[in-house]
Length: 592
Image (cartoon, rainbow, N blue to C red; front, side, top):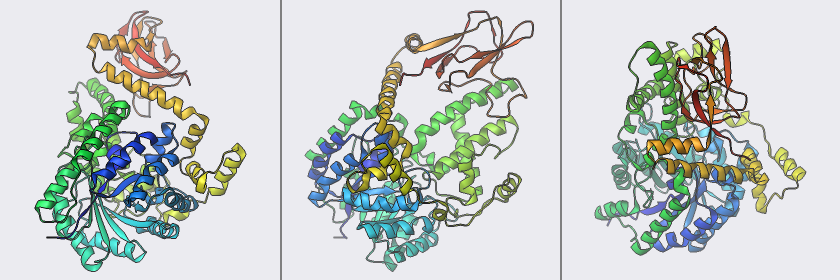
């Protein structure tokens, strides 16, 4: 029989790769004993990146949820682990050193055993300080290699990084194949290279199932020395998530590995509970597209978990682009046309910005650059003319060093815009902040919490924590949940019923005079063009919805009522309307 392989259930990432929210504390308490009864998991992912932030957004205390979820596993001898974004810790942007250092003390006290530390750029400067702080706090630091497929991401490249992280104190290495595009043969060779040089280092493989390579990759890494495999369970396995434990166990058992048995009664119970959580409320925030695999992901390398938000962005931009094309008398684009164009543009952009592994937040930055390029090229302005500070920060080196060469055109653009490249250690650019947050806790009369966990939560997620403490987060969440339920109901109605349903919750914008409708006038707008607004567009009270040019030439701005979300456009750019005609419908903002 071959070596023993252990399994981890990535229960946090199952939800994270499917939708927006995580189960509540009471739901986690119910599922934990059942996961233990399955008898096949040596590890369970209990918290980490996004877990705590979305708990706060739902008006829940994440510290209570983490403690409650970890406790039964601690008592059963099952290791718990969390996802740690290195420089960004548990959020999408950099975190001060003193806050990061506190995180490991808090998480260890709450019952988390292992921290999986990754940098989206594989810059060891963003990982090594966390290794040191995790060791100080009594946690096991698992350093991570973010896997992708490019000319610079070779076995030698990754093995060299692993050497540096192990020398810095990493006790384990995770191969994080976040988009599932790592080629199985390369992953096998990398596993062998690390194990040959560091036979005592534990290697854990984490591969998403989106493009369909993950099962082959699991077999390759196990045959070359991997120790632990991340898995999922139904109804949240496969799709853009992870392979199911049943399939992985069966494959490895047939290959001759020593793998644990699965208590199928407990598996079915865990499956039923997870579905119950989906039906209760979590399913309203799960994008159905994330339940499907797609080979298209191999070309662009984007992680499947961001497909939902990407498709929403693509839909809005498509409306604007089609408005421009229509004005030129050119054929409009379907969503499939747009998707192919976006993937091709990502393939164009990615090497030019230095091949950053496409994982949070760099996957979002590369996708956004590509999306804006599609828009500005349609306008005739060319590429790379609409890039914000976050996109530039990746290119300039503010988050770390990208693995490939930056295209010279960005150096020219940076010089014109007076932007400077830096090779400074990213974490040295951020001042400590705990004293400021501790003062805020004191000034508000807030308890810093057991093991300073409430202080940590404020320092890690300031805005979300303040909204949680005020009760505003819960109010906002209930409004969002009702909207999601309404949208689900709306999708089941006929076009006539749907129109009535939308209009019942919206204000009609009517024309106060006869004339021609314009959303912008050619040459007047240097920002994102708005030839027509798109469904879902948000307006504040006082914002202009459109303009009507009267027969005698007067141009009258039409305000967007009290503001809200656009649910229907009735008058197209250039349409002629009579007084009282409907221009569109805007859903009123919910009362706070």
